[in-house]
Length: 600
Ligand code: F6R
Image (cartoon, protein in one colour):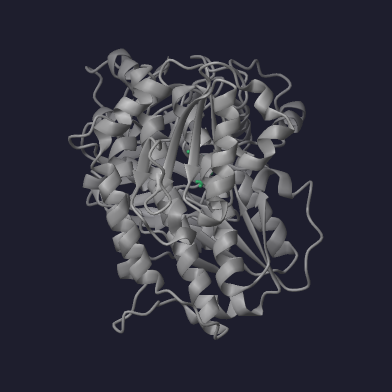
């Protein structure tokens, strides 16, 4: 989704902004721009398309030590140069970048801006025009900014500069993420710390409905009424090296490869000296208090939630419902008496999930967020957080966050079972260590998956994934991976459901990827494979050691069957990756997609 970066200091702004925007590219965008200011005023450069094009467009002879930049993922108005940010007020004095959606922009336009000719179709331009109107009245930029911001409803992260003041960036935030980074003789603004890690590792969190006056040597946080707010700094744990591709062609491959290490890191973080699970007792109590758990998530995180339900119900014996975040508000289920909500989110910023969290908090129910970004909105606003420790995930297609989510939910389920004194016949930390080794065996066989992708998928228009039990959930995730990065139409089905309609789509050569990692359904999924084969399918059967048959295309190492999704997904991630590469797709930045979906 959209990204913001701002800089005010001693160095050349252009490089800081362009480098920062490049770091935000992974979030998905369709246009970009920067505004840089010096004594002569503000220079604006905008393009439709990539940052590389913006780099070419920027006049590198203009020197400046302050500016703001933006990557836009279109919501209001087509992706073109007019709608790209930064936007300027009618006189050109004020220049702004914005993430989020202004809900009352139509009303604002009617009430305050009926005499202004707009240059774009965006809700953002309304904000900067409104600031100019307020300035006409108040003759003070800070007051005009505060007044305008107080009239906005919806979500926003804003950074604004004034052509007549090259000492200040004005910042405001509501619901959309924004941080101010602190340096020596400079300060930065970023919607994601990743954009400014080269500059600083020290940040101040900005809370909703706060304004920040950012200067070269000071950062002043204020409430909308002008009251000053003191805020401690924090150090980000993101290692700048984690945001580089290194020797990999794509972040997705690097992140797929990192999964064994992530699982080992999770084991390390969630175990005490006695090598038992270490979990916040307050989280255990919240789990024990709940009569039903509601997992709310989107996309891949939702798919991880489906597996999490199996862990919690099987091990901790608490009923679990899994809900798609964007449906929850309209299709709210009848809630139990003592619900606990679990928000699963890699980014911790997904607007659909946050909307549910707001609703849940209004109803007074407890909420736990499981996220890769502690300090994210979903983490801050929930009662509890369990971090994933997966490190930054840059490829749009989620891989290591998915397996990390399942691993953390497993530990949560086991910790709850321990709290209920339910005797389990396995040690989850040891089982996860076995999982990590099995993942490594698979990531070491990349050439095999490259060949399988070539043989089964790269020329195909569509593909089906079938499985039973937890394999079905992994099939849904495998099909999502394939479709989002290779654009092959792919669907995951429960093996037994095929005969109720979908089998009509199987024709000569249709690729079907089948998973067989569950002994209880090994026989029946193989029956489904026979059925599709009889109709001409080109079937790639992936089974688990101990359940394999001679004709299987690939056998994954044996792990505890309940935990098999953490391992069986790896071949599907690699198949999707290679099929996308073979089809020439932009693997890390698939079309139409954004990494962090911060609009509902
Ligand atoms: C797909 C993918 C998305 C996300 C979804 C939720 O590979 O990454 O489906 O899972 O947009 O995002 P988070 O987990 O950040 O809430």
